[in-house]
Length: 441
Image (cartoon, rainbow, N blue to C red; front, side, top):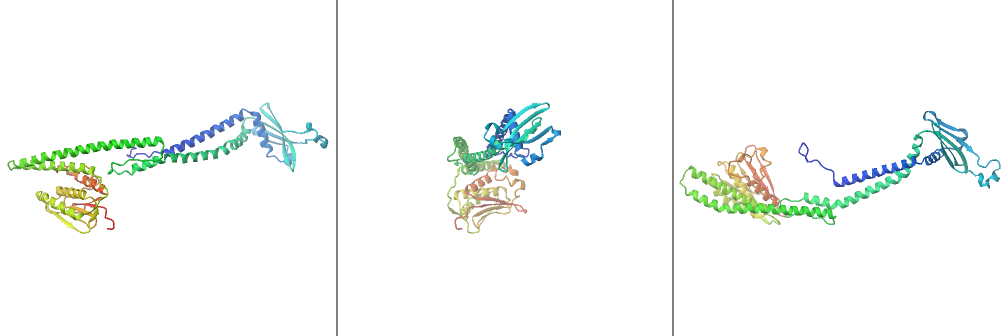
């Protein structure tokens, strides 16, 4: 679907869509993991209490505890109290051998009015010896545990999951790109297809079944389309060929009619129809033409042959032709195709040029031919469409069908030649065709 400006919006590539979906999946997985961690801790308040005391004691220095026995935040309803505990009492040597006198880590959580109290005992290594600290915390709500939960998420979710997710994304990106590589190749082949070579097909190697199935389906569609076009082209050529003989008989019969305006008009109509039929036949032949490995031809020699064949036709229309050989006109082209290009360009000039100046046909210098007339020229808006088949612009009613220049363009494309148009301000039009030069020229 195109936008308001007629442009087709650029959709994201399949590679990008898959990568984005993998990234979204990784984020969702991480969020689920975070939710599991939070739910687990909230359902185990005793574990939360132990982690809170462990976090607090990791920040304490026994020397500070001797000078400070509590820390409070009244506005938040939080209070910490600390106390150093002597583990062995007065007779240390005797108690050291008594397991019952040894201290151990413990944590107790209990509800109090307005909140809860957490009490516990922890050992801290200080100056090479174990120092025991009794901690007591009073608070309310879950905010005191936010740092505990955050540290747990970082240590057990973010640190292992982030690198794993990155590796997974990189691996999937490489895997997806590798899998889609045959599809990219098929896309480039489709873009590089030459309309002048209908036998071209897509081909991919070592592709997944889904991609080979798609390529085979496209090739099948191309094959059916080529058959349809060939059938239409054959019908057009056959019909045009079959009409030439009746038209020739009609022209001979019209010539036997009594002289007069009616006879002359009838002859002109039959000639216009014969020209149309001839162009249809020539267009069908040009569409079917595959010009591979063209030989070296001399454009001037072919031009002289066309000049001789059309000089009488131009004279019958009150026109005159002038041929100039500028030399060095060898080119890589097929003589029959060059002949048709000459003939259609000259025929087009005869149809539109005035009779007071000759139509100038030139070969060379180099692999170039040109046909110049001194008619009204071609309006600027029409110049981009004059090579379209059946397009006549402002020339409707002159007996043409808009095929001549379309045939020229089709033959030039098949030969790898370039057609240009020059319309000077003084009027007239010059069509030039530049062919491929022979090697070493």
